[in-house]
Length: 153
Image (cartoon, rainbow, N blue to C red):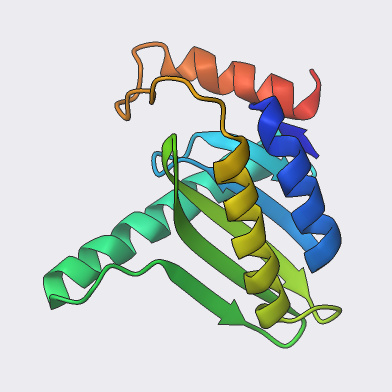
């Protein structure tokens, strides 16, 4: 379990334990990683964050084009594993959660414990000014610092 924001670690750890998630990633809509569990390397985390953010963004645009309410959750249930992608609101703005789970749990349990994790994250978010949603000029340096924090390098 690695987290850029220390206050995120406990709610994420509880979620992983309760839900039996294999892999979990919390990120901003721009793909900036907040916390992760279960990834083997930094490249996997970066790829999953970029793809998860892109899927969420393109799904939002599809909803706009079709004049539907915005999609909040997307799920794929395969024979041996499922994927759960969910956009949720925190005091720090919108975040995205990506969860991969196996047959030792169910989508219902993942959703239940994910909602509990979101409530806990909201309750433990430090009371600071909301950061700007625009990528900072030193985004690449921040990304590398975040990855070093997530993987202890």
